[in-house]
Image (cartoon, rainbow, N blue to C red):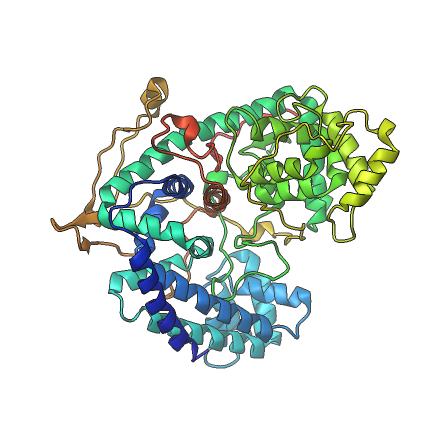
Length: 566
């Protein structure tokens, strides 16, 4: 790993040269810029400020990603001789900053010393930490040494930058999904950084305007989804049954799934992410940085009275599971129809879940009847018949054997009266430039509820003070100029607009463990919208109106989750 410093230096020089040539200081806002704004607007304002500033340093993002690739590979090799279950344990232990180092430094600890150390961490990790500290000290020591090495390399990578920038990127290690996404689309990262460098006040104001409009749209989307479930018992029952099947697929016990929860406040639900340098278990889905319990992906949980408490649409992972399995289409067809209503409706939500639904339609459009995406009268029957058709046409890896599907359909047309009888002439239009975001379903961890913490609400950034009046904004329909009192202490610039005077204080993120101040529930859903928005741009500015903001509602409001009678 020592040779990585040289590699980082080469990348840094190359990156600076390439982007100094390709990014103009006077580039106007484009559709791609607007997509970036839409996506980033869904993060909490304190996180957005960090992202803007980080985007001014794309070379750090690139070099950190390269270091992460090396360190995660080294970690995977280090634990490779352990069983899959043990590897999952070790990845989980690494989610808690400094715990492994504290257990490993100074030699093997006594039982009382171990208990004293783990007592500073969430209760759900205590037994696991004690077990490995007592019985597997050597691997903890090796992990600790690897952590120190990568910390040293990262410190060296940042050594030539100002102290506040070093602290900024240290704090972003607690947001591994953000660092990953910024590296995955460097073009848009540089665009955001360019706009922030030239006019931070304008970017912050625009982003806040988009965020305010999206909050209004989110509330509407959640209420529409609640109304659908309240009024349509078929969809409601399908969602509950599919939710149980999803939890079962991920290793949960039925008694745990059906247990009502009386003290859940989704607004304050937080979870420690996997260690950025070591990554997440390699068999989990892509970008699975934040392990969540079953109900998070459902978009609802059962309250103390046993009723459904809805806080949003089902997650990307749930949608990916549903549309990837023909059995789900046949068993829960009304849920599929409801998906179409929302993802092809007037709001045309632009989220990862939306893209999964669009991917499904495009893959099956030859067999779908006319107006499938516009009318839902017989759509549930279409889902049932598509399930039967595809079950006879699947390869072992879950992909569709198109030749087998076509042959089976032509030989059994009478069984598929709800489908398009002439697949050679598709009735559903082709959608171009739709990114395929689907993944083969991978079992995710059955998260112990005690490993999830309910904490205080996310703190507002000290740099932007707001006074919102959502009632006035909603009534007027004017989302472009929200009334705020701004304090730009953190983004003040000199007259030549060349230097940024910052006043950030993120603290020493590795000094000791403390509960993160981020609401990872919102971060995870923002990440889903982020990925969709950057993969499938939509315009925010110039088109006018709230409808044009990325399709709206990528992240659902987690407040006011009304109960639905079972």
